[in-house]
Figure 1 (cartoon, rainbow, N blue to C red):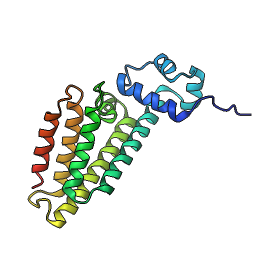
Figure 2: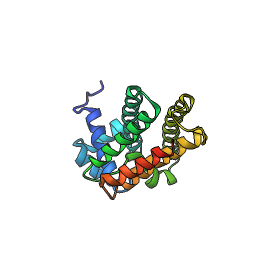
Figure 3: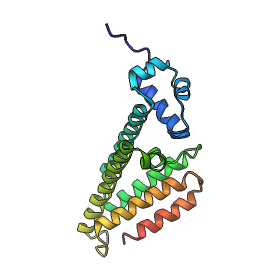
Figure 4: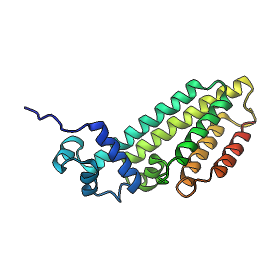
Length: 193
């Protein structure tokens, strides 16, 4: 008979996300995971497999949580520019509230792990395409309504806006000066006029 688990898998996965996010994949040892997650090594292996599998599950969980928040913002916003501003403000505020300057877990994985790991690379590329597509749809809607300039291709504007998001996420690893991010957002929005 299968033994029931003595721990909440979601809470343990959330702890793993925080540990990988803070220390990185390479900086996190199996012993770190055992100590931080509060479960035995055998439970860790039985439930999540190896460190790499746990890392992939952590990235997937983080991505799903972030996607849900972005979708809520898109659903609640009225105009295209308002939606883009709300998305950029949300991303910035989350980063500014992070006292540990962890940046974005997915961007960190893109820089540290994706160049050497095909599974992580594929996961990051799919996520990037999904976020770019979100910006593309919002910008296309704005161009159709005349709210956003038609001088630039909607896909190019979406890529520029998404690249701006990535830049903000990287910059947040070394600064928490809101004025810096306000300037970036203001300039990014001006491109849409």
